[in-house]
Image 1 (spheres, one colour):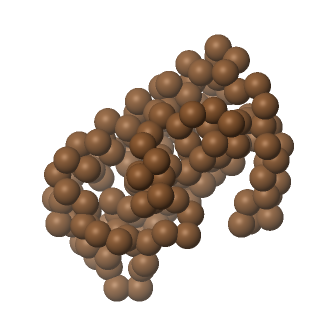
Image 2 (cartoon, rainbow, N blue to C red):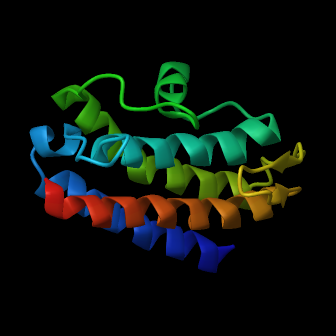
Length: 151
C-alpha cells in the first residue's frame, strides 16, 4: 500500500498548490461548461476518500458529517467557500491521508462492505478502495487542470 499512498500523496501535493496559488474568489469560481468549482473538486476528493475507505469499512469518519453531505457524490457547488473552510480543507488534505495510512498499518479496517462505483467497478476490500480512490483523485485533478485557464 506504500506505493498507492505515495501516488495519492503526490496528487494531494498538486491539489494543495492550487489552494495556495489561487485566490478564494478563483477557487470558488465555476467556469463556463463546468458544474463545480476548484474548491468543490478538492473538498470532494477528501470526502470521497473518507466514504470509500472509512464509511464502507464501518469506521468513523475523520471529518465532520456536514462536510460529507456538502461534498459527496451527486452534490454540486452550493455556496462559496469561506476563508475558514479553505483553512480546514488545506489541513484535511494531508491529515486525513496520513491518518488513513496509520489506521491501515494498525489494522483498523477489519470489515469492508462491497460497493459498485458509478464506473461499474466493484470494490470488495479496503485495499481496492484505496487504489480506486487514487484513480478518482486523478480524475478530479484532471478537471482542475482543465479549469485552471478559465480562472
